[in-house]
Amino acid sequence: MMNGMSVKGLPPGDRPRERLYHIGAQELSLQELLSIVIGSGSKGAGALAVAYRLLETFGDLPSLGKADLDDLKCVTGIGFARACQLAAAFELGKRLVRESGSNGALIKSPRDVARIFMDEMKHYDREHFKAAFLNTKNQVIKTATISIGSLNASIVHPREILKPAISTSAASIVLVHNHPTGDPKPSKEDIEFTKRFAKCGELIGIGLLDHVIIGAGKFTSLKERGYF
Image (cartoon, rainbow, N blue to C red; front, side):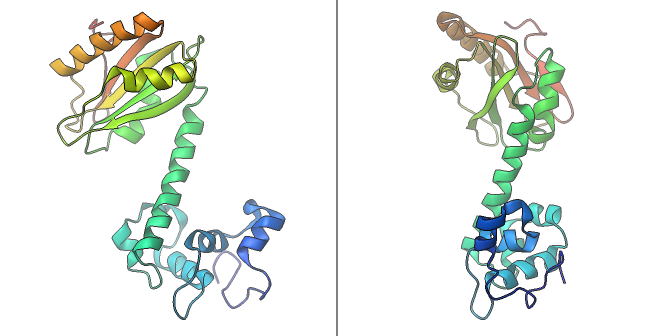
């Protein structure tokens, strides 16, 4: 028995997709929701049975959400394609939570920027360059990942940031990127890019509010350091 439902106990006509349509996704059990993501079963076992194996193997949703592709593929009935489907579904959920939490947030200081991005970015092993687009009240309209670099480099062009800024009618922008080394001290390239971007933003009337570098539990504001 798992979440009040066993595979054998499901009535023949009570199919998860039909139930979702008639009563809504919020009323489905975790096993049923997973079976819909899985799509179809494997030879000798339906999608509900495979979903049951997943829950039996990993125990709960948080543990399942942290599993990598190889871990998922160890479960009978989960091959490469289904493992990718599950990983994609969990990542969509994580992004929804992050964006829902940041949209509308008020940016008054570099600490506010760190509060939004730190937990996500401090563990990255590659440089991620992000932007937060703000309205006239310094509230976040939208956040976006601009680029993901190699282990030691990231190349960003101002137009890649200004284009979505214009489309969202942003009044100002906050740039954020992480240093995989854990040290948030700005590099010469960080400083030069920030100065160049600030000038580009001025030309079209979108100000650069700050550029915050995220490290291992630490952050640096290039605005506070007086670099632009």
